Length: 286
Image (cartoon, rainbow, N blue to C red; front, side):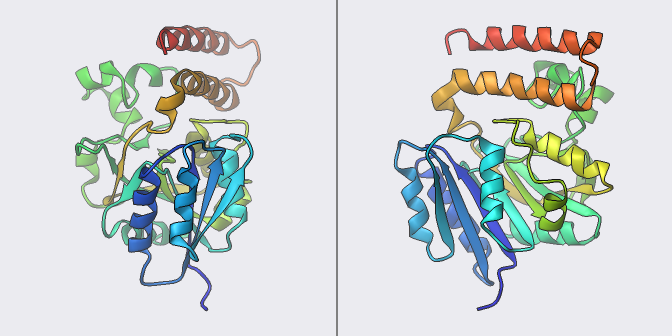
């Protein structure tokens, strides 16, 4: 049997039947060649991890006794595979036909490319804004889901935080940061930076990975002709309060690591205070 060209890694946590649709879309995309897949289950309680067995022998299941977080689980899955290219995808995401071919073409058009990411849509067809600029102090105000970005989309800060798809068209575009909901990664680059930083339990680990890769001279390629559909937060909605805390803790970790490294830097202290206040506000009634 030929060596697999692509390994697919999915981290599952109570994804239900969404996992089946995700795996089926991958199987359909990779049906013409050898591939391998790993579902890393973070102690699901809904039995969804058993869906992986339906896709044997291509897919194997790794079970964690506890929820170890997204980044660490992806690293486990990657370590269990050998393919030179890795498709990381959320279990509540699925691929439209031709997505993998378009991502692979984007990744391999330049040896400096480390990650290629698709245009990601909501189930209703709305754009999620998966290609972004590096986060900074204004990201919380003009980020992907913010009201200010919807009200003032033409402002430079809004355009910097989320790539305008009309600018990209069907051509690939170099961006700072691609969403970890669906990304095709060059293994050599992933291994060179040690994979995802496991300090991030959930959220922002994709921004951190892209920034560290760019620090070594790699580039991230947004491929809007590749399309994935993502039902945002399907798993995390069941533990909303914990997800909100993880989001803000990871946001601060990213900011402290990459933006203001001084422990007593005024902006770092301000970021901590603002994130704590935002976390408290959003957690009410969660």
